[in-house]
Amino acid sequence: MRIKRAYIYLLSFLTLSILFSCCYYLSYRHALRQFNKRAVEKAERLADLYAGAPTPLPSPAETAGLQENADDSGGDDAVSAGVLPEPVVLPSTKYILEVYDRKEGTLTTVEQNPPADIVGLTREEIEDYLDDYMRDLTLSEYNKGLLSYEMLSFSDREVKFRKSYDADMVPYRFYVAVRNGYVVVYNSDLKSIYEYTHIEAKYLPEEDRVALSNGIYINNIDELYALLESYTS
Image 1 (cartoon, rainbow, N blue to C red):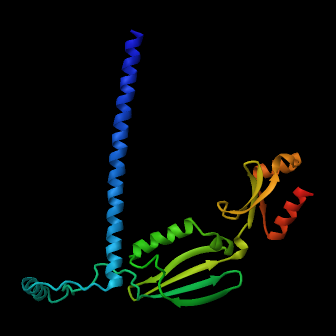
Image 2 (image 1 turned 180 degrees about the vertical axis):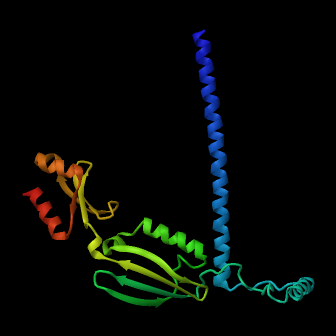
Image 3 (image 1 turned 180 degrees about the horizontal axis):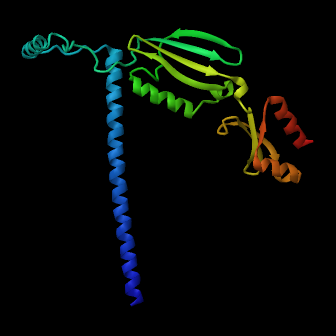
C-alpha cells in the first residue's frame, strides 16, 4: 500500500512538472515572438528613415477612392501619401538639450544631431526610454548628480530635452567592502569595480573587519587612499 501511494505521489509530481514546463515553454515562445516582431518593426522603420525609402504610389483605383473620400468629407480627413501615422524622431530632427546645474544655478543649451538611441522612436517610446535611463544610470551620470532627464517638446522636426544635475546630491564616490577575502573598492554605483587591492581582510583588526562587512562609504579619492593606507601600515 505504501509503495502504491508513493508511486501515485511520484506520478502526480511528474505530471505537474510536465504541465508546468509546457506552460512555461509556451509563455516563453509567445513572449519571444512578440519581442522579435517589435524588433523587426523598429528595424524596418529605421531602415526606411535612413535610406529614404519612397512610399509606393497608389494605384489609379486607390487614387480615385481617396479623391472620392476627400470630396465626401470636405477634405478634412484626406490622407497625404508618405505621412507617418505617428511622428517619430528622424535623423534630420533637430535635437536640443538643456543642461541645468542646480548647484551653480546655470542653464546651458546644446543643439546637435539626435542620439542614435532615440532615432525612430515615438513620443511614448521616448518616455519609456527616459524612464529606463534614470532607472539604470551610468557611473558618469551618477557621479555628476543627475536628478532628472525629461522631454520638454516633441515633433518630427524638433525635440527638446532637459537634464538637471546637482553634484551635492551625490552621497559618496566609493564603496569599500570585502570580496573573496580581499578588500575591494567599488564605484559609487555599487556595481563596477574601481580597484582590486591585495589586502586580505583576515589580517585586519576585528573593528575594521566589522566595518568592511557592513561596507564603508567614501566621499573622495583622498579619503579612500588614507583608508587603504591605514590597512597596510
